[in-house]
Length: 60
Image 1 (cartoon, one colour):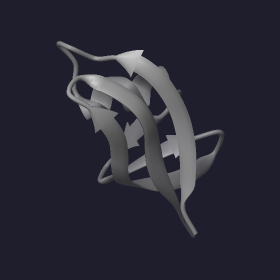
Image 2 (tube, rainbow, N blue to C red):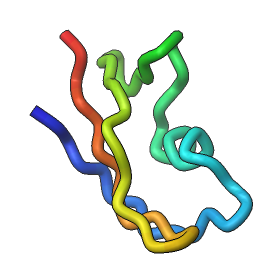
Image 3 (cartoon, rainbow, N blue to C red):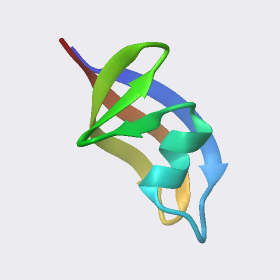
Protein backbone atom coordinates (compact mmCIF):
# COMPACT_ATOMS: atom_id res chain seq x y z
CA UNK A 1 0.00 0.00 0.00
CA UNK A 2 1.35 3.41 -0.93
CA UNK A 3 0.33 6.81 0.41
CA UNK A 4 0.37 9.98 -1.67
CA UNK A 5 1.29 13.24 0.04
CA UNK A 6 0.32 16.45 -1.77
CA UNK A 7 3.06 19.05 -2.16
CA UNK A 8 2.16 21.71 -4.74
CA UNK A 9 5.41 23.69 -4.56
CA UNK A 10 8.29 24.68 -6.83
CA UNK A 11 11.69 23.26 -5.79
CA UNK A 12 13.91 24.91 -8.38
CA UNK A 13 17.07 24.63 -6.27
CA UNK A 14 15.99 21.77 -4.01
CA UNK A 15 16.17 17.99 -3.94
CA UNK A 16 13.66 15.30 -3.03
CA UNK A 17 15.17 15.32 0.48
CA UNK A 18 14.15 18.99 0.81
CA UNK A 19 10.62 18.08 -0.28
CA UNK A 20 10.41 15.25 2.27
CA UNK A 21 11.74 17.46 5.07
CA UNK A 22 9.10 20.09 4.23
CA UNK A 23 6.46 17.35 4.53
CA UNK A 24 7.74 16.50 8.02
CA UNK A 25 9.79 13.39 7.20
CA UNK A 26 13.12 12.77 8.91
CA UNK A 27 15.88 10.57 7.50
CA UNK A 28 16.34 7.28 9.37
CA UNK A 29 19.05 5.34 7.57
CA UNK A 30 17.57 4.27 4.24
CA UNK A 31 14.01 4.97 5.43
CA UNK A 32 12.11 8.08 6.47
CA UNK A 33 10.08 8.58 9.64
CA UNK A 34 7.01 10.71 10.27
CA UNK A 35 4.64 10.60 13.25
CA UNK A 36 6.45 7.54 14.63
CA UNK A 37 6.01 5.48 11.45
CA UNK A 38 8.67 4.42 8.92
CA UNK A 39 8.26 4.92 5.18
CA UNK A 40 10.23 4.21 2.04
CA UNK A 41 10.28 6.70 -0.83
CA UNK A 42 8.53 5.40 -3.96
CA UNK A 43 8.49 8.39 -6.29
CA UNK A 44 7.05 11.79 -7.05
CA UNK A 45 4.72 13.43 -9.55
CA UNK A 46 6.40 16.53 -10.90
CA UNK A 47 6.80 18.74 -13.93
CA UNK A 48 10.25 20.27 -14.29
CA UNK A 49 10.97 21.66 -10.78
CA UNK A 50 7.33 21.83 -9.59
CA UNK A 51 6.44 18.89 -7.32
CA UNK A 52 2.75 17.97 -7.22
CA UNK A 53 2.94 14.99 -4.85
CA UNK A 54 5.23 12.41 -3.26
CA UNK A 55 4.41 8.71 -2.92
CA UNK A 56 5.64 6.87 0.16
CA UNK A 57 5.16 3.25 1.26
CA UNK A 58 4.81 2.35 4.96
CA UNK A 59 7.40 -0.09 6.32
CA UNK A 60 6.24 -2.59 8.93
